Structures are given as C-alpha cells and as structure tokens.
Image 1: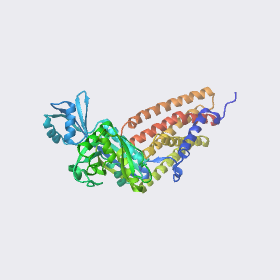
Image 2 (image 1 turned 180 degrees about the vertical axis):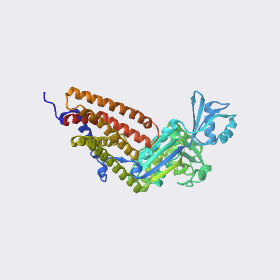
Image 3 (image 1 turned 60 degrees about the vertical axis):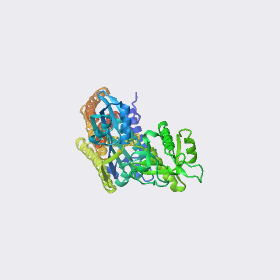
Image 4 (image 1 turned 135 degrees about the vertical axis):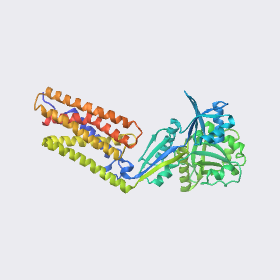
Amino acid sequence: MKEKGLLGDIKVMALLFFVLAALFVIYGYPQPPPDAGINGNLRYGLDLVGGSWLQLKLEGTLVGINASVNESAVADFLEKELDTEVSYYKTDEGTIYEIRKSIARDNLSEVLSAINGSIDFFEEGVTPATRDETRRIIETKINMLGLASATIRTVGDNLIIIDLAGIDIRTAKDIVGKPGKFEIRIQTEGVGGEIEKGQRIEEIENITAHVMYGSEGIGSVGTVPTRDDENSPWGAPFALKEGGAVALRDAAVNYGATDNPTEHELAMLLDDVVVYSAPLASEACADLKKEPIYTWTANTGVGDEGRAEAKELIIHLRAGALPVNVDIMGSGEVPAYLGAKFKEGAIIAGLFALLFVTLVVFLRYREKKIVLPMFFTLFSEVILILGFAVMVPGGWQLDLPSIAGIIAVIGTGVDQLVIITDEVLSGGRSSASMYRKRISFAFGIIFVSATTTIVAMLALAFMALGALRGFAIVTIVGLLIGIFITRPAYARVIETIV
C-alpha cells in the first residue's frame, strides 16, 4: 500500500492548520486597526509600548466585637457613628464586622464604648467579596472608557494592581486612581443653587443629609445618555433597588424636597466631591408623596455639553460606586520612547535566540535537511504562541516576561527536537516498527522533561506575582503546543527526509 506524502499526514496537516489559524486571528479576524502594521491584533504590555501602573489599597477594617447588643444592632450603630457601610458575617471563631473605611483601633474602641463594646480582633483589609466587587467595578469603568490595553490583578485581600498600556501616569490616576465611593445626599438647609459641582463634602455636609451609597441603592444604570426629543435635555438614566428607592422617598419627604424641591436639591458625590446637583422634577415630587420611584433620569443639560456631562455621570453611576475608598500606594510610568526601545530589543532578542540555536544545531549535524525543518518547527511554535495570545478572551498582553517565556520555549524546544533527531539518526535506516519504537522512546523523555517543567511553572502561574505569572503561562502554553502539535509533525518530517 502506497504511503501518503507529508502533506497527507494528519500530524503535518494539523500543524499547518493551526499555523494558518494563528496567522488568521493575528492578521485577519477581527480586522486589525489601520495603523497596526506587522503587529496585527497583538497587544503589548506597558513595558513594550509605554504606559502606567497603579497599586491601589482598598480602605477597610475587619474587626471582631464583643458587645451587649446583637450583631444587627452593632452594625446599625457603627453605620450611624462612622457614616459608612458596615456588614457582618459569621466564622468558626465568631462574628466579623467589615467596616468599609479605615479607622484606627483606638478610635473604634472609643466609639464602641457607647454600647459597652470591646474589640476581640482587628486588622486592616476587606473581605474577598468586597475586593472582587471593587475590581469588577473598576474593570467596568475602564471598559466603558475604551481602554482595551489594560490589565487588573489582585494581590491579597486589599491590593489591586492596574497596568494601563499607552496611558500616561496623570491620566491613569484621573481614570482609576481615585474612583472613590459614590454617595447620594439631599439638601436640608440653605438655598437652591448653593451646592455646586466640584465642591467637597466638607463644604456641604452641614446643609445636606446622607441618603444612600451607590453600592447599596443603585440597581442598574443605562449605557448611553437619553433625551425625549431634540430640544429636550440630555439625561443619565438609572434604576434604584428597593432599599434605595425607599431611602430616597423617605429623605425627600422628611426634608421637604417634595414640597419645595428648588431649595432641597439632590446631590451626587464621587469620592466626597460633588459631581451632580439638581432639584427633583415637580412630577417626581408628586409621585414620591404616594410611593417610592424606582426609575430615574438625572438631567444634565442640552447640546453637546449636556450630552458629555450625562455620559460622565453614567460612568460615575455605573463604575464609580465602589464599595470602599481606594488609596494609591504606588505608581509608575514607562515613557513611550523607552517602551519602544524595549519592544525593539525584545524582538531582536527573540530572533537572535532562534537564529543562534539553529546555528548550533547546524554545527552539530551539518545537514540542511535537518536544520531547516527544525528552524521552521521552532518558528511555527512562536506563531502558535502569538496566536494563543490573541485568542485568549480579552487578549493576552505581550510584555518582557512573555517574550522571555517565548525564548525559554525556543530553548527547551530545540532540546526536544535534538532528542528526536538523535534517536532517528542513531538507528540508521530501519523498519517502520523499529523507527516507531525509537520515536516512542524519544517522546517518553520529552514528556517527562516537559511535565517537570510545567509542574514547576504552575506554581508561578497560580501565584499573584504579576510578571512571573506571564512568564510561566507562556512557557506552559509553549510546551503544550510542542508536545501535542509541533513535535509529532517534526518527527514525521524527519522520518521522511532522513
């Protein structure tokens, strides 16, 4: 029976298929930006294109409290005294209270003395649920602003690290450095118009009362500004949860907003700064006297300016309502020109690694028919890794550690190809069954070697070590691609040409 040629072999066909698929996702679909050039759909981290990074600390306190009243009463008391959200959950050691702001232990002890309370456990931090909620909201804000080249990772329970490629440090801090806590207050004293955008809470606190925090009261927010017709003002639509709707209704009635809305404006604050203030509409005042209102639109004005303000307010409503305040613990910037130099150096390093290992192989075997297949096998692995980086949901950013991982894959890859080649050459020409035995022996060595490396890399991949994690994941992906795609195809090629 006549054997199929190389192009008819399933292993070679699989390699060609995956290489073409990788090239397609890099350069074909989705269509790269017009100025992408050779980069295609590849995304680069801030150390290759320049950008900024921020390290955010979530401000919160976890405490165990021994008091003469029940848990609910303690939480309600602390919310009133500390003017922040307080929740509690039970553990095997007892009840832990999460205070969503930073407070010194001595100050908290003084506050608790009013209910004969004492502190059994105290540490700075927030619960994993609060940390994850904060990260999700920050991601939403970044996505809404169209910042695709951003990565967010958590370290521990109260640290979030954000990389923003192509964004200078000042802009990065404006975008996510202090997204703060969203709060709605209602004017209790003074005259209409006294509360202005940009004022801090210290300037309005005595003439306003707290109504709700965004995380507890806002249920959903519209995605785009709306208006009734071309002559109507733009507005930011949002809906309240039941608790938020009831709180707003009660505050509007108790403080006189339903009877005199002009003198009792509704103020929205982000990170203790006023971002919106306006009186309630007369129709809303009439309805609030009867029942809570769940669906609202905060009107911002007409024209392009009103639309821009509505869009900004939507971002605050959707993504500014962090459960806790954040503090910038560290920041840094890689200038664009320096990132370009790093990128150029990384590409040159990768090409030189590929060429040098090929040269070493040539000096060993002195056979073009061996060196060329080996070179193209290694080159195809690089293409497949880059294709993987594009296909990962959200896109994997290539940075210096990722490039280092690709170079490491080239190094381990050539070792494994040499093992296959030596096994084939050592037995000379022989029967197909004997050849299969030698290839099986070679792959046994390769599997053991790759497995030990993958196990070692998994320790880094599952740890929140940032740069090392990227190196580990790229190395693991490269090894798996080699074992299941490129090595079998190379073995089939060597069998044919040697």
